Image 1 (cartoon, one colour):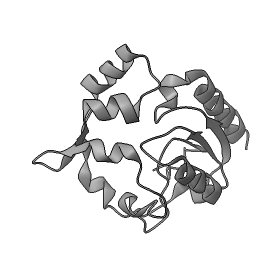
Image 2 (cartoon, rainbow, N blue to C red):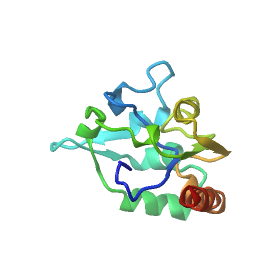
Image 3 (tube, one colour):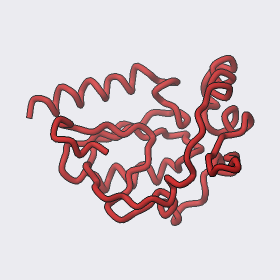
Image 4 (spheres, rainbow, N blue to C red):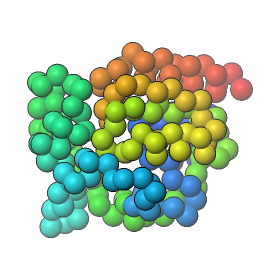
Length: 155
């Protein structure tokens, strides 16, 4: 992702950031498992869906109840194979990068997010949010994206 020459900078928001040769499933083993992972349920086709309990308590606990219910009802399934796929190109190695750490994330350990940001030498902002700071703290996330767009396009 992000390798296209038209991409001038990258913004990660509470996201995994594997290096070349790494798979998502290999990351963060030095940290205790994030509680939200226990609420992912596979279907017969290998797709994963978060339980309603998982959305309410782990994925988006800082959203108002009506928004959490909406997230639970409208979530898309994730292809479980993504956790085993090895990354061929880490665009963050060659592009300016920003990272929004979700300080109360229960899906990706916040310390793992900080580790990614440090490895990328990203300009880092920490927000006291769950895994969805773009929903619970949209102004703060938008500020980072706007800064990244202005800075990266100026270079």
